[in-house]
Length: 91
Image (cartoon, rainbow, N blue to C red; front, side, top):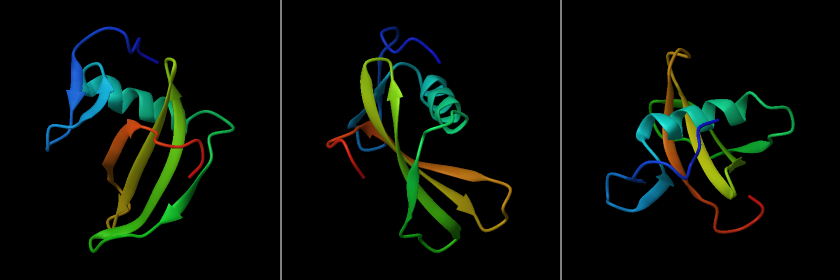
């Protein structure tokens, strides 16, 4: 996983902080987290064009991060919906 202390603060499309670091580091951190045993999440409400949507918590440096991804209907692509500091310790 990339070092979150380097690089600028990554902002969402509405200008809110997501993760410290570069955009590719956020994607890399989420992919790393989903590859680790013990990372658990649950299915949540999906929107049109998405087969399923999942939320999960994962560590990123010293932070606990909330992530939300969706599987597209084509079953080939994943959409990253959210990645920001978790506001609570459970989903």
